[in-house]
Structures are given as C-alpha cells and as structure tokens.
Image (cartoon, rainbow, N blue to C red; front, side):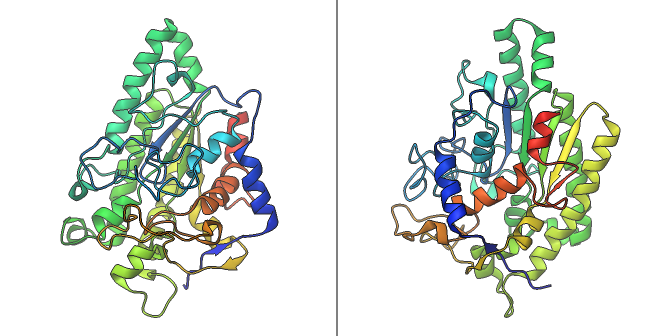
Length: 357
C-alpha cells in the first residue's frame, strides 16, 4: 500500500488555529488532566537530563506563546491542544517543574526517547521511561492526597480526570529499527515484536488503572515510515514512505485496539478509548505536501540544529523536525481526537465524549 500524508490547509484551519490560541473556557470539562508519553507530548521534562533528546533551544518553540520550553515542535503539542479543548486555561506543567499548587489540575510526565520497553532510547542518554512515568504519577498522587488531606476524596477526584497516553514510537525508531544498537530485531519478527510490545503495554495500562485512572486515552502509532529521518535512513524504493516500517507499525496498531477493548471488558468501571492516528493521517483531505523537515536537522537523530534556519511558513509543513510534526498537524490530530470525524478516528468514543462520561 502506498501511503500519502495530506494536510488540510484552508482558511478554516488558519482561523481555527487563531481562535484556539485565545480559547478561554470558564470551567474545565474535567478536574484534571495527566499526560504520559514521549517527545510527541514532552513539554520540558528532558531539559535537565543528560540526554541528546532536548528541545530547549531555538528554533524549537518559535511559535509557542511561552517561547522555548522543551517541546519538540514549533508550537503546541497534541496534548497541549487537547488540554485547551478540555477548557484548561493554562498548559499542564511538566513533572520536573510542577508545584503543589499546580498538580491538582494535572501533570505532564512525557519524556523524549521514552518507550514502553525499558531499554528503548538508552543510546541517546537519560529519559523517563513509561514505567518511570507511572512511578512519578504514583508520587504525585501521594502529594495530592497529602494536600487534600482526604484519601477518599482524592481517589474519587482522580477518577474524573482524563489520562492521555501517547507512547510507542521510540520502541520502533530508537529500538527495533536500530539493529546495530538493540537486539530486538534479531530476536523477534515484526509480528512477534508487536505482540510482545502490546502485552507489556497492556500491563502498564493496567497499572495506570490500579493507580486510579478511569478515563484513559490510548494513542495508536502514526506513519513512522513517512518521517523524514526514516526516509533518509532507509530509502523508499520509489514510494512516498518506507512501507516496511509502516507495515510493522500497523501490526502494533492492529493488536493495540483489541487490547483497549479487552481492558474495557476487564474493568467495567473504566473507560479506555483508542485514537487511530494512522487513520487520521490517511484520511485527512487537502494538499499533499513533501515529507521534509521544516528546520535543518542533525543527520544522526533528526533534531533541529541549534539556531539553524527554519521554513518561513510552518503551516505549510507536515514535519518540523525529522520525527515530529508541526503545530498545524498537531492541531489536526488533536481536533479529530477530541471530536472524531468518523468511527475509525476514535473507538469506542472520542475525547469530548469521554470527558462527559
């Protein structure tokens, strides 16, 4: 199958972006919002780590209201925009900086190069793996319980919150697809790896449930084979993207949705929902744009070269860096996650519905 990523670039999108910048809602739809994941949602947790995975320099954040923060794009992430849709007046703070006064409305635990697997991303240095993010969340829960001085109230409070999980890309990009650095591709076929990965992911999502989460958004993986750096590394054999990578990721997504369905069956008091990023990418109408990065990137990891030249019209670019999309693309992803255009976008319900449950 030949994959093409399309970007809907119309006056409506531009106006929507402008309106979302100043969106103000009197009361958030849920009391709090917790974010887990990798560089697609990281808002600064990697800034003080010993790692190559940092975005605390220009030209990152060139379009973000607060400037350079550690977000791996030109502006807002998917998680930021969904937080605005949910009515939060401020961006959810990163765990590394969250104060006691802030944690009652949520925490962002995301970390670039983090994976479902513990070893994922280790060649790039320090990162906060998904297991470690869950441990950090447990610590925040303890802090919150002490502040509220009522454990029962805290437990009931946390059940009403939205928990967004967007992780797994690096388990391919910085693990399985790097055979010289990681053994996984020598041990597992693509199908076996997808099975092992989703099994571990299911256990981690169960841990999140056991920590009190009841409204959990689980993102599938996007078309990693269309990322500019993967195209440079592997070539496309004349196709638009690296189809072998997209096929491997597709096996993971095909297993992840049934995992979400099973979790809903096993935990009747919880509401898990699956966001199909691949479907959103494949069905987004509009202008076909090239798979090239907006900023000048380092060849070894696809990140922006510090203080380098970047494209002047970011809204006409799919990718800001070698692996991460522009704010415009994040807005499309977030919009269709929050309010699905089809049943294929979100299952069993989109985030706006989940918030009302």
